[in-house]
Length: 75
Image (cartoon, rainbow, N blue to C red):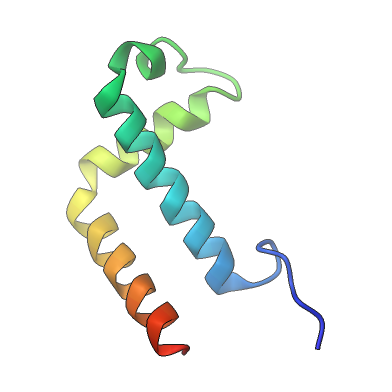
């Protein structure tokens, strides 16, 4: 059976999005000036993901835990 890329496998796509949100939030915490000055264009995606991670952090953390459980159980 052929392996699917993250674009065509829904679970992998969710994993990539969660990792992007968590990474951007961490980068904003470590270097806020780097993220805050780029609010438009392609760099704005980092700002928006960091904002989502900050404002919805309980839900993002629950989603990360749920994703970890599904990966460990092989569901």
